[in-house]
Image (cartoon, rainbow, N blue to C red; front, top):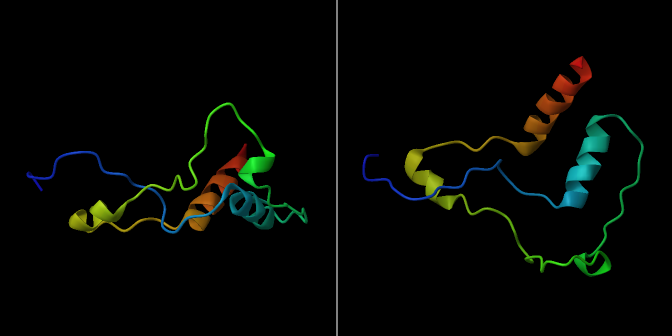
Length: 84
């Protein structure tokens, strides 16, 4: 891997929207809370938001790395928060 140079992105496997992320947080926490989708146009911000801001992790294949499951990572974080 000595010839590997540059910037590599690493994120969890799969992707989700902020809405899907919030839904999963409440689901894993055992909370019966309804999270509604809100289009970006309904939440104006001073900065222009990209339509797709997912990281492209395809170059990681050269390193034979397995991307972790984001739902499993979320479960780990929630378990740690329970300890506080």
